[in-house]
Length: 376
Image (cartoon, rainbow, N blue to C red; front, top):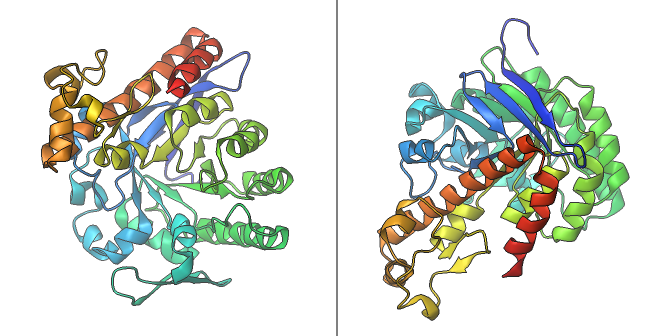
């Protein structure tokens, strides 16, 4: 980290005795004090879908995620920079983490070509050629004014051959070094990404190399991409707690409430996922007893709220029957209420996790919480 600029502060405040769960305080260069473990709502295109930025903040979130690849294509980082950065462009007054576009290397595999230089895509909007190199990924994130930037990496399929996975991981290490060299004084904190699929030894080797390179935080990528919860948990149980203790540990793209609880037990501090917002739009609402499919006919005459313990507008003002009516009628209000409810649930989930860590009861609580969530 450059001595002239403090990009990030991170302090572990409590470590559990019987697991690797820990609470911590992350302070970004904007001055946001973010209690960890923390969940970051996803605002891929400079908006958390269906939400006003102030509503997101009122739910207690101080950091969200946006995406380099998508904003590179639309509207373009130059336009965002002309507005003074992404915070001003989207009216968000707190911190932003930007994914480098590495996930799109995985999700748009049919549209891209990987070389040592970087990745070339066929733009999913119009078919034009778009290129993303480590240097360009950093330049775009700096244009966006990101508080936490991610290195450009490849997220290889978990069932890749050993040779392909090895070559991919080694290239990601070289790209990570180029990202470090490309960052300027205006750049935010920079996180490395540990890859290696389901190969534990490869993961540990990659972790060891990246940990010596001076990154501000460390992330685990390449999970929750079809490998199944047991395989993901097996990797996390061996890898997550070995990431440097003095830096944030970020599990990318995860996930379901039960996945988050398990990952916290393995020592993870930060999470993001489209699950609460995307599933809200599909009529799935989260509760402590598992998700509710509001579109199901069983709710057509139900006058009770989705969750009697929830203080969000969807639960304090409306019934399941009304929310189902909105969903079936394709009303915008239904999407908004569902999204507010799910994000509120995730905010409450993370608050409960932090409380249990602080009280020293996380380990026992997590067992009962997982039983409730998975009973449905």
